[in-house]
Image (cartoon, rainbow, N blue to C red):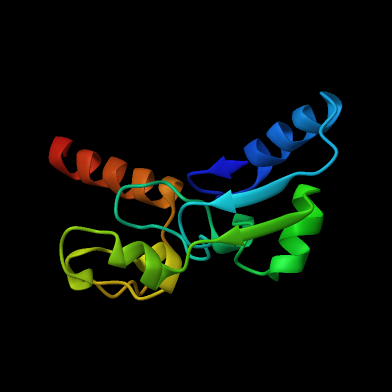
Length: 125
């Protein structure tokens, strides 16, 4: 089975279980992006680090959690070699942990929404 990405693992785990129920004897998962280990603060809502499947698990632990016979991810370097522009043109923070703009506070979807609401409150005042 090939998946474009595995973030939390819940959707993938459901697909794996469906394949097992349909009679698959072996399932080998290949993921077309590197393991997502870090939150994204730049517009894609990836949850906090603790909710990311690959953030605190080894490849073997991911395999066991997903109930697959094997799991492999493309490397960050391998993925970037496939891109049309040089590697430094792309944000890789969710995979590498190297943020282009320093992130000094804990930011998530809800804290950003609260911040936006405060801005609206200030405008109305």
